[in-house]
Image (tube, rainbow, N blue to C red):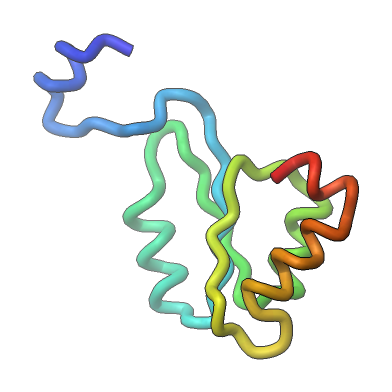
Length: 94
């Protein structure tokens, strides 16, 4: 990455490689906030409104990072993380 070009640009992004981010939160406003503020030309943001949906998306697609709300009804962020750690397929991807 050319640092001089980044410094001259009115917009700069930390990510210069394609990146997929999963954001799981039961608050629709925070999900929208994440999409608006984390999206970039190279970052794709996907959302899940609950832990079960997040887990399903993690099993069906590759993500570079998952941001999990710790206080969701049903499967909260801690429960999702426990399931990721217990699943050998997911554990290798996260």
